[in-house]
Length: 160
Image (cartoon, rainbow, N blue to C red; front, top):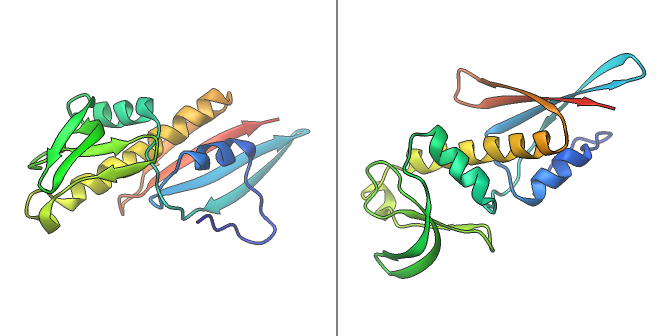
């Protein structure tokens, strides 16, 4: 679900990025320049994450110093699943990204077979990497900063 404050609209860049799913840990401040004026428009967005981009998955793994993801069939405790497998530190089973549906399949036995914080961090960094890919594809400049609470601030300079 996307929440937009009344009177605000999202630039095309973010509409495109949202189709691939971003995460609530990501905050956006969009700066746009029109005819020499500088306006700052802030968006805080809450949506359901879907992991669909293999390049962003690979970038997130690299950034977190995880092994490169591999396309394979994985045996979890309750059965087999196929997709892009990501090995998280200390997890008994990998997380499987089913890119067509955007869903993540995993079994961490309520934290006994893997710390949920590692999955949360992976999803957060996936979202950041996906947003950066979309912004760069649209020709925009990006600044990124990690805040004290662990949230990540992304500033996208939109020039028109």
